[in-house]
Image (cartoon, rainbow, N blue to C red; front, top):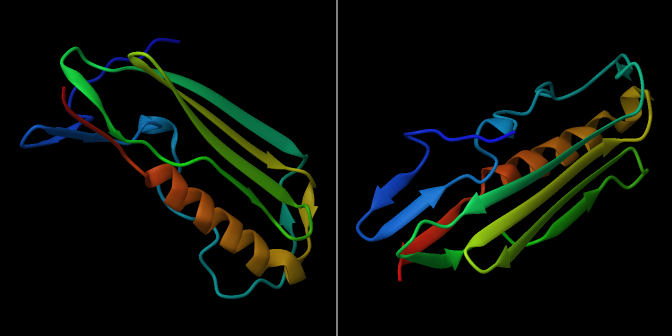
Length: 132
């Protein structure tokens, strides 16, 4: 799929700021309660992979890209990986999210909630481009 959009980049002086996941990122943590009394039912284990290639506009260079990270729950419930590769005038973002179990017991709710929070914070990080 190819994606082009306007109003996705914030410009300040000679810098461009944007979230590389655009509309693919989670906006907020769905696990908002402080506690949970019932299991979370995902119906089945699941995996979501994204590979995003960003063309750096002519006249710009990368000032900052998100660091690579792997976030895993202590009990192997979920895994999130985020990798950024710059090659020439392109940036490749590889994002992988996995939930390994169909049902999460209430006693693991806090662990899963922290996992989602860390994932969402990572997905919000921005790429910064500056005039070359």
